[in-house]
Length: 340
Image 1 (cartoon, rainbow, N blue to C red):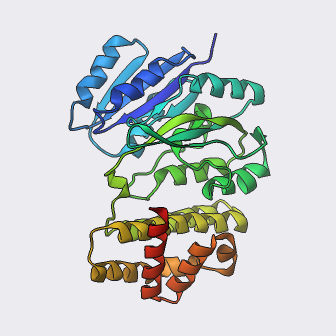
Image 2 (cartoon, rainbow, N blue to C red):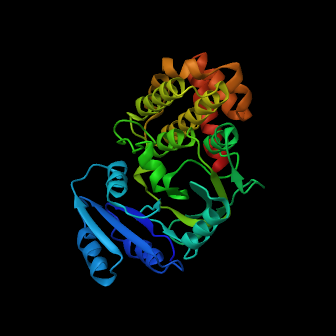
Image 3 (cartoon, helix red, strand yellow):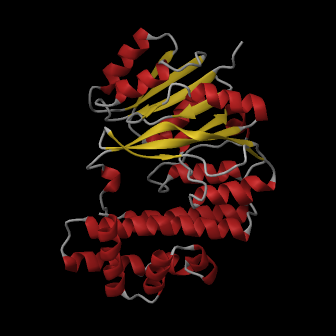
C-alpha cells in the first residue's frame, strides 16, 4: 500500500484563495493523503469553509485554534500528523496535482529524508511571472554536501530555490527525532529559514525534483511587501539567532558566511521597502540612518561576505558600514527604478 503523506495547511484570512488551494490537494494523483487544515483563528469565512471541506472529503481533518501565526499552526500539524512524510502549503497558494506523487517517487528512488522541488511564481492572481526550477544536475545530496553545498546554495538562491517550508517534503520521523519545531514569527523573522538551517545541519539525505510544482502567488498590496519600522530589529534578531545556533552546532565558517549573506538579502529587501513607501524623503533618510547604525549589520559586513555579494549590494553595504546615509539612499533609488 502507498505510504500515507500528511499535508498541513495553516489557514488565516484566505477565504478568496482557500478553495483553490484545498482543491489542488484533494485532486492529487497520489491519493493516500491526510489533509490537515489548521484554522489559525481566522476572522473571515475560512473556519466555515474548512468545516465544509471536512464534510466533503474523509481525508480532511480540521483543527480550530487561537491565532498564533503560521509557525505555530505548522507545529500543530506536526503534532497531529500520522503520515510517513509531511508537507506544508500556504492557504493562498496552490500546487500541481502531481506534486505528491513525484515527491514520493523521489523518496523511493533515493531513500531521502527531504525532497526539494521548484515553484512557479504567479503575479496578481493570474499572470505567470516565472518558473523557478532546480539549478543543479544532482538528484541527491548526502553527508557534508547537505550543509556545505545544498544549505549554502539554498540560503543564497544559488540553485534557484530557497529555504521556504512549502517547497519541501519532509520525513516526519526526522522532524520528531530532532524535536524540530517552527519558532514564532514574533521571535524570529523568517521562521522557515531558521527551521531549514536546523534541519539541514543534521545527517540527512536530500533529493531533488527539478520542476516547478508549487504555485507561489504574489498578491498586490501584500502586507509582507509593506515597510514596517520594526523590520530591522527583526532582521537583526534573525541573524543573531542563526549565528548562535551555528556556533552551538559547530557549523563551518562557510555556512556562517552564507547565513550573513542571507541576512543581507533581508537588509536589501528592507531598504527597498523604505524607498517604495509613502514616507517623506526626510523620514526615508531617518529610517535608513537607523538601519545603518545597526551594530549587528556592521559586524556581518566583512571582506569575505562582500566578495560573495553582487556589485550593487556590495556597494550599498560598504556605504552602510561607513554610515553614508545619503549615498545609501541614492543607491536604493537607483535599484528601485531599475526594477520598475
